[in-house]
Length: 384
Image (cartoon, rainbow, N blue to C red; front, side):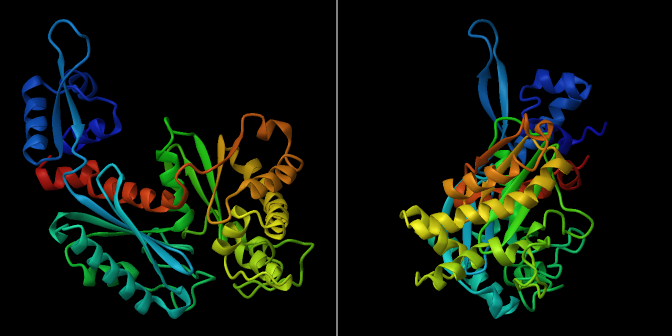
C-alpha cells in the first residue's frame, strides 16, 4: 500500500492508528521512515501530539490526532427560501452559524452573490482570515452531477441547470477550493458521521419544501450516474394523476406530500403557510391541521420509501428536513412497515436525525476535509 505522509494522516484521521506503534503495525514502514512521515505531518501542523496514552504504568505511547484547528471550512446549505452558513473546524464542529433569506427562483447569479457576500461578512465578524479557510462546501436542493459539480436539471431551481456554481464561488473567494453536493446527500454524510460506527447502508429522507433521499453505502455517499440517486420526490403515484409538480409532470410524490404541497393544503383551510419550514413550525406549535396533513404526507412518502427499503436493505433510515416530526414519522411507519416484507425491516431503525438544521453543513464540512486532506492530496503537497 502507498505509505506517504497522506496515508499516515488517513490512518490517524480514521482513528485506525493513533500512536507510532500502531502506525508501524498498520503501514509496515521502518521506524525511521515512519518517524519522518510523522515529523512531516507535525511540522505542517496537520497532526498534534497529545502526550501519553494507554496504561497508567510503564512508558506511555504518544497519542497523535488530526489538528482540528489547523484551518477552517465554510459550509453553505442552500434551501429554496434560505441558506444556512457555517464556519467549522476540520472535524466539522461549527464555530459560527447563521442563516440568510433568499429565493433560489431568483436564479444562480444573484443567489450566489448573496451567499458569498454573507460568507465574507461572517469571516470578517469572526476575524477569520480568508487564507485560513481550506475549502468551501455548497449544497443545493436539487441533483448535482458528481463529475461536473454542476446542477443537473433541478426541478425547484429554474435557470440553474448546468450552472458553474463552483466557479462563481471560487471567483468571489479566490484560492479556496469548492465542493458541491445535493442537500440530502450532504445531510446524509453529516448524520452518518455523527453515529458511533460506520453503517453498511443508511438512507436519509429529507422532507422540506421538496422531498429527497441521501444514500450512504459503507460510509460513502452513493450519488448515481449523474447525481440523480435518491430523487424520490419525482416518483409518480398512480392514485394522484392530476397533481401538478414543479418539474412539470403530474402525479409526483412531491406534488402531493412535500412541504410545499402540505402548505398549499393548509392555505385552503385558511392557515397561512408557504413552505416546509412553515409547516414544521405549525406542527411544533401544536396546530392540529398541520399535524394531520403531515401525518398523511408521511403515509404517502412511506409508500415510495417501502421500495427504497426493499432495494437498499438499509440498517437505518434517518428522517430530516424542516418537516421532520413525530406526525411525519408516525405516517411513515404506517405504510412503510405494511408495504414491506418483515425480512426487509426486521433490523431496520427508523428515526429522526440527530443534527437537525446542521446536518447538511456538517456533512459538507466533512466532504471538504475528505477532499482537501485526502491521502493523495496531502502526498501531493508534502511529498509521498
